Image (cartoon, rainbow, N blue to C red; front, side, top):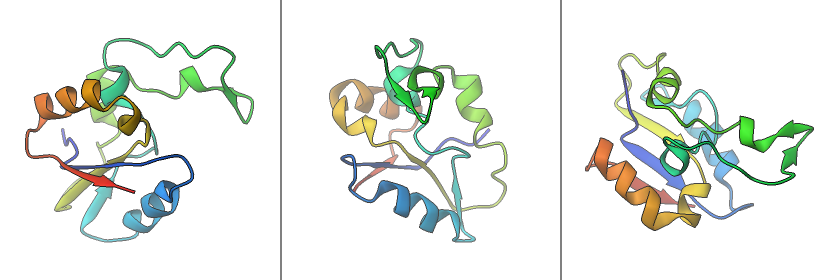
Amino acid sequence: MSMPNFVVIGAAKSGTSSLYYYLQQHPDIGMCQIKEPNFFTFEGCPSDFVRATYDFVDINDLHVSTLEKYQHLFSHITTEKAVGDVSPMYMFRAKHTAGFIQHYNADTMLIQC
């Protein structure tokens, strides 16, 4: 299974959504099937935001916390040279997140938006 070799981090409203959709259009780039899986922030522990809803969906249900589910989000990757994940939340828990990213691929590039 593929894992990302680049991760886009950034502040809210900094253009990460636009960048995600632009990158999806490039034939040599494979993007995670969903924007903001936040795996490297919540691996092994589900998020527990209180009263957090987005378009009537509980935000806690949107995070991916298992490796199996995360890798499944890249199951469509075949020959793409670059594989990416866009999760701005990674920037807010940088010390925690950096260790998890390095654990899976020490060569992962970080792109700040």
